[in-house]
Length: 127
Image (cartoon, one colour):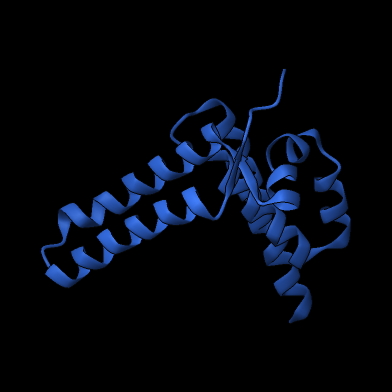
């Protein structure tokens, strides 16, 4: 059973990694959160996959600063926030339950508070 769970983590990590790479090209997919998910899954699934992923330039360019310093570039923050806003707007539009809508609005406010005050903004790396 334990091997199956580790395999599932690795499988989900590879899917998240693939989608994260697609997010580099497609602006509708948020690269950073998908790569964070991949990193988490690789940590839980396999030391070998974790070491491999942390050695890639993809990890170093997009996640290393966040993991070490709890900091992101302004572009990374905006991409995540806007993607999340779109995902939250969908149920907000379709659901007419007042308390659900209120909860969604509170989530949006907290999300912005967290990204503005809890995660440092760093300049984008020079290419």
